[in-house]
Each structure stands twice: as structure tokens, then as C-alpha cells.
Image 1: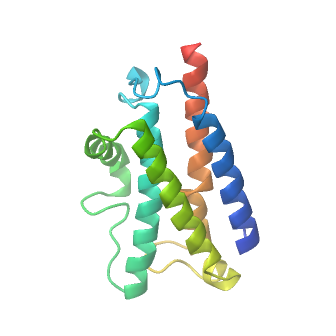
Image 2: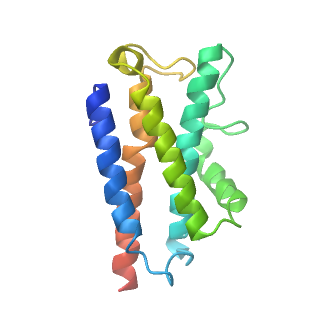
Length: 167
């Protein structure tokens, strides 16, 4: 369920959830950052961070492409929504050489891009109509929330579980 329905709320929830996620990531010990989770397709905490950064980039690309009126490949070129497992595995492969510091830096940079996107738009632009090219009734603000704060929350839940399991 979306937490925001206006620009001010969207910015607030985006910043709040990002700050919480960053504080949690600061607690991930170096020994756990690159450890694959056999119960989650070998995903590492670093992969989770890189994944969240990549989805912000996807959203911003969808938005820009939609404005041109060109077809938008969602979730990404060559993938359908029912192929997210394959997309995520391919993303992990593409990001395999990325280290923890680089993943965190990419997330910070893309979070800043997301916040700038939100800040540059008014309530009507964010919530007044479905996102062009989005293929459903979600307005850009809802897509931004899904790519940012909702993803931060789900990532934090996973990271907390990994920290608990590690003892």
C-alpha cells in the first residue's frame, strides 16, 4: 500500500526509509557483505544494495522514455514482469564485480537522483495521471515510491533477517 499521495509525503517517506536503510547497512559486518544466501538464489547483502540502485535507474528510464511517447520496455528490454527472477539473476551477474563500497555509492547516487526527480515535480505531475508508458493506472509518484522507499523497506527486512541469522 502506498504511503504517499502528494509530493511532500513522497519526499518525506523516501528520505525516512533511505536513512533507516543506510543506518542498517552501516551495521552489516564486512564478513557478511559478500556472503551468498543459499535460500535466496545465492544473493548477497551487496547484491541487495546494487539491486535497489538498479531499480531506481530503471524507474527513471521508464519515466523519461514514456515522455517521448516511445514504447517502454518494462521491467527491462528482453524481460517481462513474470521473468523477474531471471532479470534479477542477470542483474547479479552484471554486478558481480561490484564491491560493497561501490554498491553503496551507486545507491546513494541513485537515491539522490530519485529525490531530485521528486523535488522537480509538483503534485499534479506526480499524482495527477498514470505514468506515460507505465502500462497501468499508477501515477509517477506511485512508481517512484515503489522504486525507492518501498524497495528500501523490503531490502531492510531482508538484511535484518540476514543479520539475525548470522548471529
